[in-house]
Picture 1: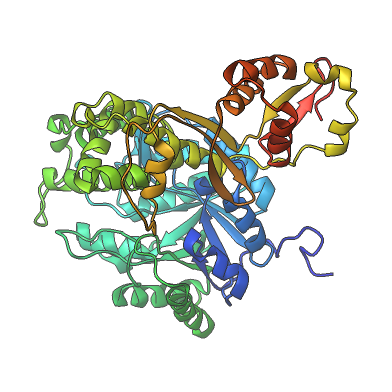
Picture 2: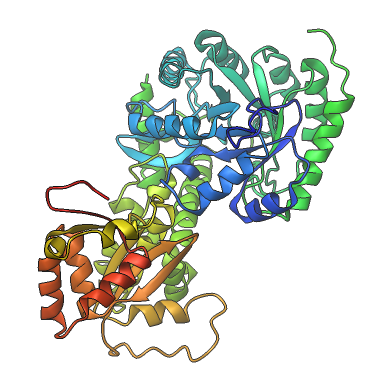
Length: 286
Length: 263
């Protein structure tokens, strides 16, 4: 009997293939057509409700695909206290859906009880490093599992930052024991916005810690690149991705698309491009 | 040096209250963008997120007032009602009450109730699933003890009351509505049941006796008292028919004898 046949769930482990970000407009089509993507990822908070259609759909999709829960609201770098109620809802979701990955962002999002509901940049200081590592350790302890932490796009840098972003991220993983969700698009966006070498950033990533990769599109119409998740993955980002996979070996790779959501076929075609790279990579020893 | 906590406080103030004085000195300028422009990127993103969240929850309010007016309302709302959750789906529950006291909307007296209706629809959409009442268990209750029964309303149901014809306003502003869009504002009150059966959320008008019955049961009054209130609201009410409609229709999702087990 295949794994999951008794529980109504597909296998839990996320395969070394591409997956897609699951968004409401595509749910019905995915259930009916079962596209050949390796796995799906949802924003955890979109399933914090108790019931209704979102859960009906997700349960049916979970029966066919491994699932990753990607949080956008915990703000692990916020100086405000960790929101235990939020963590409790996440824990309940994990119990219900048995996800292969649980991830969050390296950012802050609330101050003085006010949530800005955005992925805000940390100053890269020893204080921030201590703080966010403590939070990640607390989260992993409560959930009883390793979480993945994703680098975010940013549009400013703080003068009192003393640690390069890539060293900060690598040190977070080393100290807290978390895995890294490496968003190659965010690395590219920040490299352009802040004038560093994206390749040096990627080369500094500890290979063992990187367990998932995100790819998405950005908006280049303004004075700096904005991470909108509303366009195809850029050519430069595909190049960086190809190099990253060549160095690390294959990693589960997610195509994210959150604004101006295209037809499902566009998303699965992007995922197909990532799969092609994953299948043809020849990882060098690291 | 600014502590992490202080930095986040001044950052929040800069983005939300547009008071950037304490923050700009901590931001590296250059690459063609000064500190103010960089903060503004975040302000655009943060306010944009709030606006998109409320546009999704309040499409009829948006249709009634237009995009520019709606955005201005959201931006002012954010100043007075901070988002208190990392889950953006929790944001916006007081938008109706805010609009009722917001001077630019003073002439749109019905706006508050439309917003309350849309918030009820949003909450009902995400509320828990529960099974229907076991009809055999209900039928087995001895006739004499019926008045002592207490009922629970389905978690995916809400009652919205208004002195304005909000159901009609809501209906003519649905996408794809074709027909006469004129609404007579003095057409009379609408007391509405918002309920999710299967996947879709329905909005239905309640008669005065139904409203009294359901509100009494929601307040945990026993069926006998709820029946009396329904009678006061509308003489000659057919209790059996009302109960049947709301048990079979799922509005009532559980019952218990006053001292007994929930069924």
